[in-house]
Image: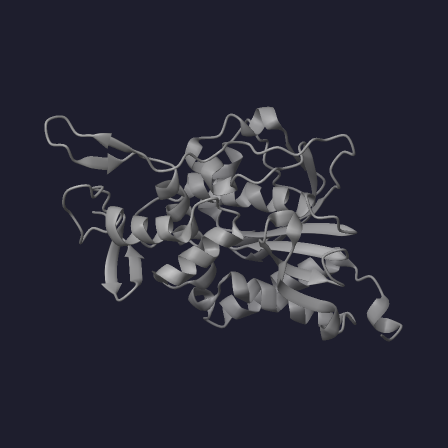
Length: 312
């Protein structure tokens, strides 16, 4: 490794450069083509431009601390600098994903905090509507400017709706988690990049899950002997995974295999067979019958392929 490649980058300038590169793509008419992977690629290019060689970088890095989950990007391995990236896209389905998206945004802070790394970053590229939604969450005091802190305590997170808690997941989290906004930079007139440096957890903190997701249960429908899945649980986790995949990829369709992989990445406790049954039966608008839940969340668009159902 060369002397140049071992230098620690000026991270604040790196994130400003990432915002600039994303802005250039949008100015060139490629805004609708940008996804979370685009943010990661712009980060790779920005790091290379300040002397971080490609051999120091890795994506989708497995780490035992996340029970087999993956980190979006690392520099010098998972004990070096770990980075989680988010670019939630505006809903194309008419379904507001704000509550689930809030859980997904919070989860990234909790994920990097449990990793024994030298440096931890959470970078979020946010639309105006989502920024307004976050600013209304008074119990969290979501940072909107450089120098402001996000403090995630068990008490504050306990006020979240179940949908958000399901999106956060059931892994043992170290709390409290403190993150400082060090970059708040416009991408263009309606998009901004926020970069947070996340502190290491307190030495005395005891890891524990926020809430355990309950397995899907059956309850008898009066006089029929049929059953329906109880709302929440596996269904909520699957919906959160689908929304996350759509946001990252920019595609409206997902496959069963992609959702199963995403659930594993998020540390879900549900078996693959449960996920597949939920999607192919209980959540599919094209499937009805005895012992089938009537949740028209998804449209089947091909073999093993689904799309979030359009709402009027």
